[in-house]
Image 1 (cartoon, rainbow, N blue to C red):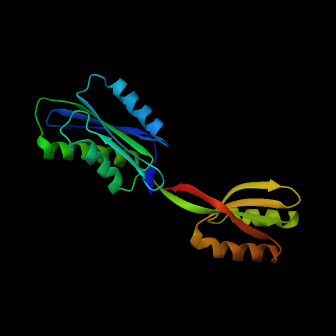
Image 2 (tube, helix red, strand yellow):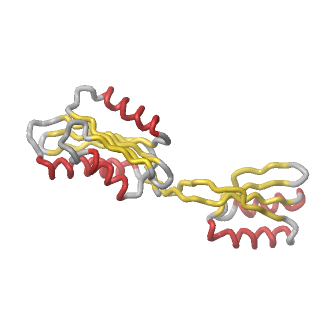
Image 3 (tube, helix red, strand yellow):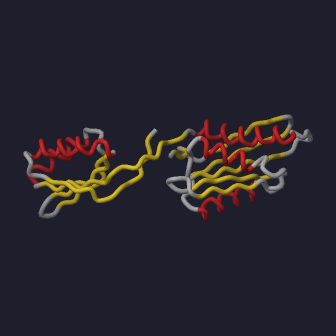
Length: 205
C-alpha cells in the first residue's frame, strides 16, 4: 500500500466552478473526522465539502460523503481514486464553489475524482512496506564491525542497546533475511546470533 508524502492542496476550475482538494495523512477515524471538520469550518461558505478517506495497512476502513451533491457523484469517485492508487491512511476533502453552470452526473464524477488525483500528483506518494524486525546479539568486540557494516548496507538499523552483549535491532525485507544471516555469520565468525522479533512498516519513495 501507499500513502501521500505530505499534507497539501490543489485547486482546479471547471466551467466556472472552483474545486479545491485538500489531502492529509491520518492514522485514525478521529483524525480523519477532525481534518474534515476543520476544512468544513474553513470553507463554511462553499456549496459542498465532499469527503473520502481510507485507513489501515490493508485499506480496511473506507468512508465517503457526497455532502449534498447527487448520490454517487462526489464521495464515491473520490474514494475510487484512493482505492485505485492503493493509497491508505489518507483523507481528502474537495470543496466546491458553484460557478453557475451545472456539470451533470458524469461531469461531477470526473471533476471530483480528477480533483483528488491532481492533489495526490501534486504532493506525491510514499510506498508503505512491511519489514521484519530482527535483533542481532553480538559480543562487544564484534558489535562495532557488525553495526558499521549493517549501516552501510540496505538493512535499516533502528537501535543499538548495550548490556552483557550488544543488541542491534534491524529492519529487513523478508526476501533479504538469508543475506542478513550470512552477513552476520561472516562478520562475527559465527559467534553472533539473531532472532526475528516482529514487523514494522516503513515508507520509501
